[in-house]
Image 1: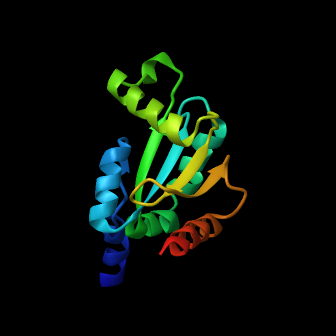
Image 2: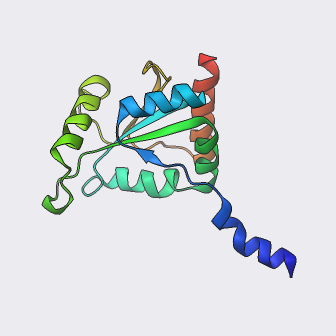
Length: 146
């Protein structure tokens, strides 16, 4: 009985990493918590590979566990549908992130940064690998900076 109860309640106690939308705030958090930043450029309502990346990789339990321990997640979203439009302030933040880290406007485009904003590794498109392999690439990028 105790095992069944623990199995049912365990998902409620697992931490889910939060997505941030301001890179400067993420840098401060990363510095304070000694973490790295994973910046993802997506088109949440029009980019099939972006939607797939969020569902298959970022929402995966193994990825979430690794991210919670090592990363501050930042999403720079560029929706196209009128009902999903961002505030002007958020659009300015996203445009600034894109100008610095994604000037060619690729989607999805993911960048691993240190807490100072230095690019350690980037991924163009949906990773053609398992979630575990993608997480290992992130860990290798982090380890190469230490």
